[in-house]
Length: 484
Figure 1 (cartoon, rainbow, N blue to C red):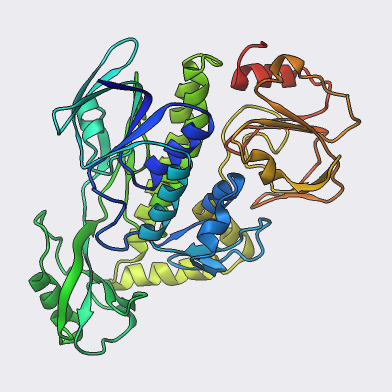
Figure 2: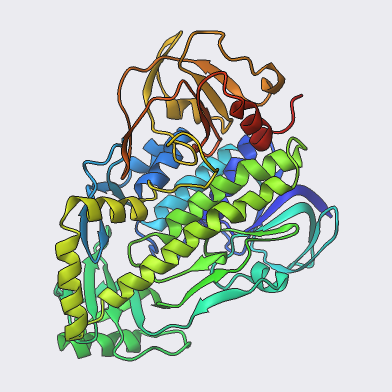
């Protein structure tokens, strides 16, 4: 029986990101993946939002993705929301298909020497006070201290753990396909009584179709015949569609795990939350789930922090997931084609044409406005640290560069030597720096500059304030363990 500190089920974007985070923390992690390779049947999700790109930038790998995608200065919530004026280096959406996102992440995970048990599935597990025994489809087994299910919306890990998946049944369905067409189709979006229909061109010239079904589709796997009939119903022709490489159906089913943890079993990504793909948020919050969980799990495994630190994963990420469920349900309602819904959509579009509503919605959709509740304190507390260009002894440096190793950082903007964190020196970097520019956050605007700031490995501010403030010691202890 092979043993690992953490076993992750699923090598999608969430599982790969979590594996990389744990590997950076020198944790023995492995992935179980049913696919023989990283290849996907279909291009799947279509992009990365600002906060996800920032997260990748914090690890020094954002350019790998940016070099292969196309940027757009807006995201979409019923109508286009311009984010080009947001105070971030990445004030855009990166158009890049999931198959490429996974490939790049898998290459990075390979560089970090994470083993992947391919062509195997988890068939069962039992957990005790010290770990989890995991049964595999090839009759093999693994032992891990923790098991993380990032195995999608139909997560077997979640089901076997008995974690309730509460929410709403579907009310509408869409067919999606990628195929060749003998005739030139009507490219672009068409709105019909059934809903939105779209045909786009992929990089290799094939067509990608998203067709709203007139009636809620059954649970059966759709066929080429279903696609042909739907095309004829909307366009009067099937354009000679043939040789499909991917056909699927998705719905507006909306569900969330009531708990992201059951003792030594954890959930992340679609295993923890499913919702309609409007706005393209699912892949993004899954990646951000992983970055929130990784360093916490690592510190507990290293016995730096108590197990209670893992509970903050659910406390912080469950509300983020719930908010995404809420806004995707609203977007689905705005997509309805009846006259009353269209009237509502017109009023909504007029409102978000104003700066304040636009910024609020765009901040939520992009993930840039996430605010974890750490109590009273500086306006930065619980929010993402802006990527400032600060001056250190060796010259200018970006703050995100200081996070490449996934370690916490305390930045002192006062006189050198004003802060002493010797008891935590083995786990927290102390950086003496200066910065004279404005401190500006998305949505809330400018904030007063703190004298010092403590940044967690996931890029969120754990403490900010005056150098001698007693709260610094409390924050260091709460997030990064008792003094050595």
